[in-house]
Length: 263
Image (cartoon, rainbow, N blue to C red; front, side):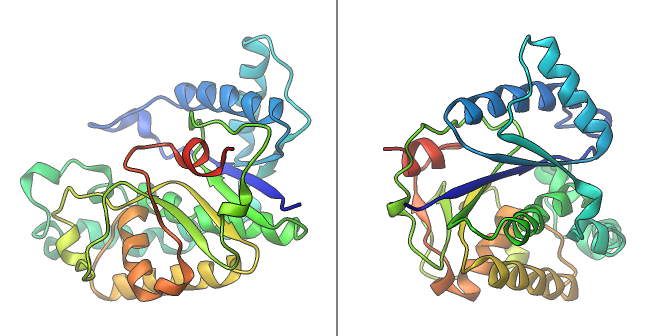
């Protein structure tokens, strides 16, 4: 029987204070608690990477909605993980603040968080760091699945994991992939979304390779004075090594569990 460990995480990057696309932490936490209860009721273990203050708010929110924290929901101190956010925040913010970078962003996209807040990009890139940490600490699982904090795509008790190929990384596609690789600089001005970064599955044999490939791509983009969100970085990674990926076209958000894994 193939097994899956689910992983999620959250970092307070002061989104409540953003001029555009702002969101309160309490909303994230409330949605997470509902998600966590759904995972636990379906019998699935969920690792949650957060800082200690966020953990405390989650525990208080469980109580506020009249629920006990499920045993299958386990918190991990995010500060114990070496993330891309920890390593690359100064360089990515310098890129975003540079005149060269600003000139590549059209007026319609200048308030998009991926072009303003380096921390936003880097905490999304750090999803694979949390998945890799989970895999190292819990090596007995076949698959490790990331699902965004508070995502409303809940699992059933039975998962059709035979649909996930071994040694691969599985993402959902919002738009069918083009034959040729879209240029990373051109994607800074594009509204087209190909890969949806909210959920992905990594087979145990692909975790280490994927984390290394991801970091190498970040460094390559830094050399080109590019900072972008995880969805466009994954797009570049796919064309870098198509053999590592098994994308599935779904065409809608937050659907990898309900459309791809559930029986």
